[in-house]
Image 1 (cartoon, rainbow, N blue to C red):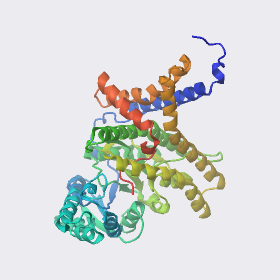
Image 2 (cartoon, one colour):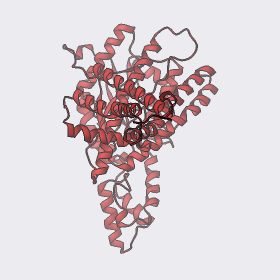
Image 3 (spheres, rainbow, N blue to C red):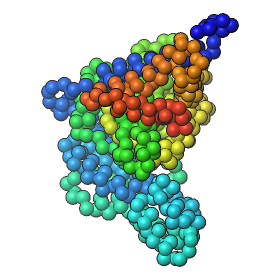
Image 4 (cartoon, rainbow, N blue to C red):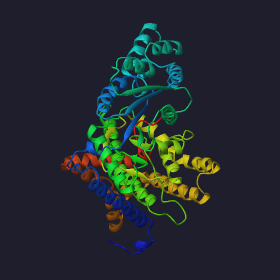
Amino acid sequence: MNTKGRNPLWRSPAWWTAAAVAARNLNGMRQVRRTLAWADQPAPAGNRRSAEPMVLHVVIPVLREQQQITAVLAWFVPLLRGFPGWTLTLVSTVREDRERRHLAARLAGATAADLTVERFPQLTGDELTALGEALSGTGEGSLTKAVAAEVLSGFPTTADVITAELAHLPEEEPVVRHVRYQGEGRKAAQVNAAVEQLATTDAGQEYIAVYDVDSRPSRELLERTAQFLARRRAQDGELPRVVQQSARFATQDAAGSWWERGLCRGAARAQTLWTLRREIPNLRRYADAARRPHTGPGLPGLAQTVGHGLLVRVDDFRKVSGLPTFTVLDDVTFGYRLTLDGIPVDSLPFTTTVPAAEYLSELLAQSERWFQSYLDYPNCAARWHAEGHGRRRDHAMALTIGAYRGMAWLLVSPATAVCLALALGPHTRLPIRAAAATALWAATVAPVRALAAAEGRPLTVRETSIRSAETLVLQCDFVIYPVEGSARRRR
């Protein structure tokens, strides 16, 4: 190869870009392996229930989830029978009625071809069928607002379904409540409304557990959580203040086209890898730093909590005034508030599996909200500094960390695309090509194989290629790439 006239390698921007991305991705791969070695290990022998120290108040905010209520109760009611004092609260909202009217307006002008779950993911299959039949009956080419509103009014709201289901529960069942939130707020406001009406015996020994409507925590998960809490109390002299149950994500391949199914599988896998690579290690570092005597300036880091599987001791939940309601998302910014008070957030050494988005429209909607979550940090700084929470330098440090994480997320796609172009480019110098290929391998192939091996399902070469390609596509498109603190149902 003729190297005359070429700049030295150290003066090449392409070399430094590929080397930097490779270094970051290799460190990320190291974090994935460390997390897999730490999490989801076999449970220790012995009687788990004997160590149970806590009372859990499960809170599930719901919106347009009529189809899920029966399954939620069928899962949680038998689960809570073996845990004395535990409760379940389903929180519906009058916002659903307002959104139904708005949805009727959106349906105005819709043709039969428009009535699909991809176009209107808020609607159930039965609702779409009824709308199609009503459209056929009018003889018109499109729906009117009045016809759409009439059809939708014939279906019960989530609150109606909850009320009917609870009426069928025997009195001896565990305490199940229905709170009807009357305000304008979203998920965070629903949770806060439920906690305001919650009667507790000892707020320092009881937890609020926030779950999504499609969450299905197993008895083993809850028993191991209780065991973990007991160990922490033995070490620290008190129960942990906040605990995070991190999740892995999976799809049911519900999309109709093969490319959309592959895209959603890649998104779910990328979410899982982000949890293992960033979310859990960050929480572990923050919890360790928050527990150490802190005499220097600044914060011990920045906690980023996740709304799914978030356990907060009742006294601390009330101390920080609940989940923030003035931001787009509540969970990421809730971690900001915890950081200001130096409250540790413990990551459980085991994960659970939750559903991921099944359609491209869901991924796009998620991405829009997740992107805005980083933009919420300045709002948090302004709001809580004005209220006297945290010093100016504390907010400056938190904003710096948040900005770094946000930029790191935004740069994933262009950095991956650049490395892909360098690795495939016919004129790329060999050292640069090797660095770019290493970056791509550490971001896709290696973690995909490590994840499958940890799940006890080693991959063939063909399976590795397919899964790596699905993951790579997601990393080349920041619009649907997951961000820290992700979960499927964010409102």
